[in-house]
Image (tube, rainbow, N blue to C red; front, side, top):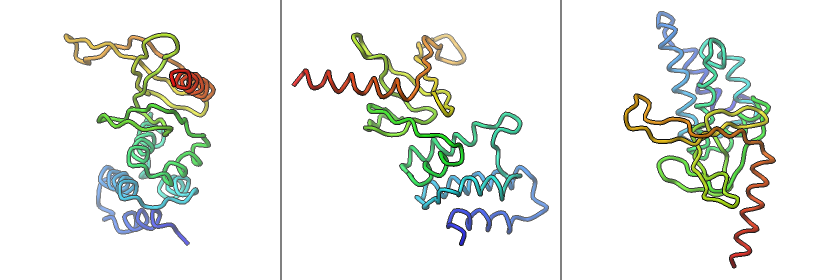
Length: 187
């Protein structure tokens, strides 16, 4: 039996007017995935694989450099705390989550031991110095890239990369251990 997510996508796919443009159908499919995530639909572990397989022409997954759409789904699932969507996405990507304490997700929401996604901000490089705020800019199966930015007033981009960090799960685990020890010493 199809999950509610796949039923929603199948309904949109099967009932779209065939004279609709590819862009309209594609955008409707993308919005349907977002609706399912935002409303807390339960995703089965296979759902993201099925979405890719059954709705390939409506799904941007890296063909033509559109990998970021897939990561936007993950980012939304993390933000909305739709854990079943996160797990389904991670199964599709064959990727374990990057979990870390002290994550700051915009706008100013602090969480503990949550998944990192594109755009997640957190304090890093805390050992023995003032921590810096970094933002996740890239994720792959074994590492994330997080950047520390310097504000620039006279620029179209308003930010300049001050330092780029390549962070593994082991780095995250070590940082959390050191922080835990520091907190224990302060008691």
